[in-house]
Amino acid sequence: MKTWLDKKAHWLLLAPFLILFAIFILLPVLAAVGLSFTYFNTVQTPTWAGIQNYISLMTKDPIFMQKILPNTIKFAVIVGPGGFILSFFMAWLLAQLTRGPRTVLAVILYSPSMIGGVTMSVVWKVIFSSDQAGYLNSMLLSLGVINEPIKWLQSEQFLMPIMILVSLWSSMGVGFLAMLSGVINGDREIYEAAYIDGVSNRFQEIMYITIPTMKPQMLFGATMAIVNAFKTSDIGVQLSGSNPTPQYAGSLIVNHIQDYGFIRNEMGYAAALSVVLLLLIFFSSRVAKKLFSD
Image (cartoon, rainbow, N blue to C red):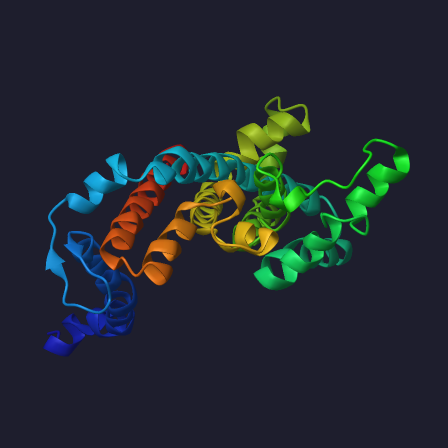
């Protein structure tokens, strides 16, 4: 007969995770939701404001509705799916190589995601520097394409595309490694059987075998791509050197949260923005789950 300890052993094993999850995930989320219904300036005691912060967000914050929200959606829609597709494509290409070259190239592709934002911005700021010493300006001037240097990182027209380029370059993170593992460890017998049954080229192999057999890795990669796309904040600020970015051209919702929370000390409003960000990530993740769940 099982003792009480035997029956509850699985809860004892789960207890450390549940405690850490409650402290570092659940409580901060609940605190943010609670603060979003208050006025809190970090000095005085929070006072109840009801849904006023959410009303202000939609009706009294033109910067959010006209700049921040469109920028965030545009950035996430391009970088999220774009980074995911690029990660899968590169993972599939590397899987066709032998172990040695594959390992070296995987490390090279993965390394940008490990580089700190400051280091990454230094590299790209050299390329897009606004003077003649910038690599891109220097090349275009020498070719006669432009007559004077372009201020790439202070331009409302160019900052967002540069942010997207840098983000795609550094998008080969853990999602990429998960998909690479899924492609490499696929059951070869399934591929052999599929070719016997009529699969005749690599495209059909990817569509009918590779993707269906690695849906868990695809779901993980999609979720990580979505989360990374929405939570990105430092790229625009570090490239342009200011927060908010020039004309809010590269400002995203996380930058807006930092602006109101840590510069203006309007924590209640910042919490409401955080809840909106959480909802965007949640619904986007649900879409990814619908696409890749069995």
